[in-house]
View 1 (cartoon, rainbow, N blue to C red):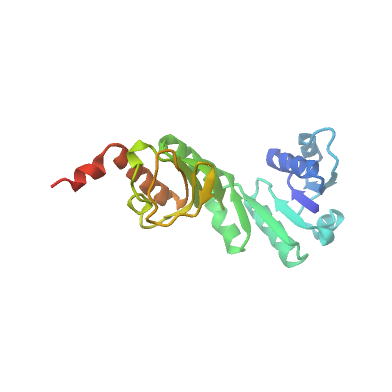
View 2 (view 1 turned 180 degrees about the vertical axis):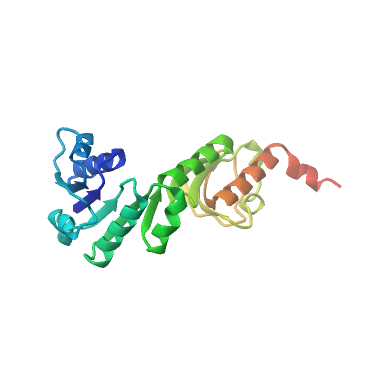
Amino acid sequence: MKLIVVGCGRVGAELAERLSQRGNQVVVIDQSEDAFRNLPADFKGRMVEGQALSKDVLRRAGISQADGLAAVTSSDSINAVVAHIAREEFDVPSVVVRNFNSRWRSMHEAFGLQVVSSSSWGAQRIEELLYHQETRTVFSAGNGEVELYEFLARAELEGRSLSDLIPESGCVVAALSRAGRAVIPEPNQLLKEGDAIVVSATLDGSEALRQRLQAFYQGEPEKEKQP
């Protein structure tokens, strides 16, 4: 693939090198020649010095034949404008932008762009790690709005059904693995100790699931059944 990376800071340099190592033809654009020092000495891609807002610079980088472009500078406005130009004027099939300041994320979304917000995603992941001890994240979609979580059924869940455990909203079961075999279970599926359950959930949904797990492990559901 022919790919363009706009911005050669730490993120851009790391991305360009990873793409190049996978056999892609990579061109890196940056307005500062010094920025190219972030690239490894054996980088096999091409470097174009210039302002990415200039269509001449984009053409020198080969945007007319590009399969994808990533705008990852530290300027949200530059990222948004460059990505918009790439998609609307040069019909680049795949365009992704980096959101540097989460306050400006709505600007990227207004353009209908694919956005990666490292600050928003990072803050959410740290929040989850601080108190999500029963579940672990295995996949994150978008900027963490929906994630896949996995947890193992402990002895306290033996004989319980998934419908007893899964919250009514913000959380759905994606898979259940038992003895090395995975299935998409029915809501009335009874659990066994050691089952690995994968759920797709929002942050609120995962928090509700965590609370239910804690309640089961602390014996609270049993108490509720007593007269």
